[in-house]
Structure formats: C-alpha cells, structure tokens
Image 1 (cartoon, helix red, strand yellow):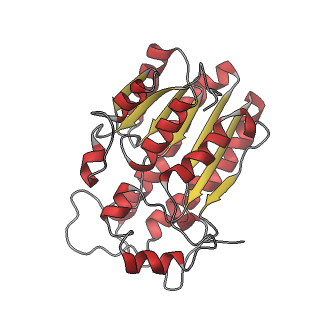
Image 2: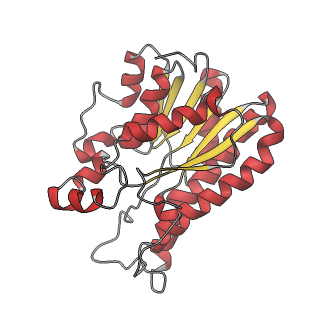
Length: 272
C-alpha cells in the first residue's frame, strides 16, 4: 500500500475494536503513526473479536508505525484536553482525527426495557446517547482544531450514520438518530469555519456493517442478514474495511478539495 500518510499523526477515538480498529490499521498501513483512544483498550474482548496482538496499539506497532494507547472518556472535556496534550507531547503534532467513539449503546446502569421513542424517551437515556455520540465528537474536534489551526493543516473525519439521514415508519431510536444527525450538520458548520486554515472536515454515514458488535447482536444471522440484503442495492452487508477505504479517501490528498460533506457507506441502502 502506498505510504501516502508517512510522517502524519492520526488519532482514532473508539479505536480498540470494530470499525475504529479498522480505521486505525488502515491509516497505519498508509504510513501514519496512530494514537488509539478508548475507555477500554481491550474492548475487542467484549464481543469476541479476533486481533493479531494484545491490543490494537500493538497491532499498529507490528506494522512498523509508532502507536500509543490512551484511555480517555471523550464526553469529558478535561480528559479530551489531556489526551490531546499527550498526543502533542509524544508526537509533536496531530494531522488526522477520526471521531469514531459512540454508538447506539445502553446506559451501563440501565436495566429492563427503556423506550427510545421521540415522545417518551427518558432524559437520562437521551443525555447518555447524545453525550457519547455528539458531545464527544464536538469536544475532540475543538481540542484537535487548536494545533491544526496553528499548523494550518488537518483532516477531520466524523462518523455519522444512516440513522442520522432518514427514519422508518414508526420512528424509534430517537436519541441515537438525532445525535448522528447533529454530527452531520456540525461537520458542515465546522468545515465552513476551518476552511481558511486549510483543514478539511467531513463525515461518513455507515449503514449495515458487520462489525464485531453487530455480529454479536445477531446481524449476521441468516434470516436477518437475508432481510437486510434484500434492501441494499449491492445485495450485501458491509465490512469494516468498506468504511476504512472511504476514511482513506477523506484523510489523503485525494480529498484535498472536499470539505463539509457526508459520504454514505451503505451499499445503496438509502438512495436520495
């Protein structure tokens, strides 16, 4: 693979498993030194994901790149600011930020059924979803934009979702969907603000991807998979690498004249 990112430093949030891991390894293969952020640097174990080293940080090092794992909660400004300081102290710069942390997750302390409907979701569930998806993205963008402005360069990739672009009959999943929609529009506003500093800000919107968590939750079961594939123009579910290839486009010189955009990575699940 051409070393298009040689000499660059990348930070991937939520990078200890699944899609985040895929982004981190792709960037490393392109020559970047990669910082892995997660609240659990061994998160891959939660869903039985097989990796080639004790942590994703070690996998990056096996590829011949420098790497550092940082435990930090991206919903807490002090932890995010400390993380960026560590990155700058260790590597001297930050050139790429991939805001992957988040997901349609339950509050750790939640028990039983909790409605995620627009008309009756609890304040606690709404705040949790909004914080781990939208607030975490904003805090990381704000912290990374400081050194990027000074060096007058940078590539930021935020992760939205097809859930942030459309809804289905009956609604549901409101906090996650609205948070991901907020990421999309925040991306546009931030791109308009940072363009004068030669910083590109874009986002991707994955759909039905076979991440380790999705597989553990049943997405790959034959009946469910067949039903989903029947709704996708390309007739297959996505792999993490399908998303990583689009991230590659957005962090290399191929996208130097692209900013404020959202690229759907859905195989044609949503066509508009």
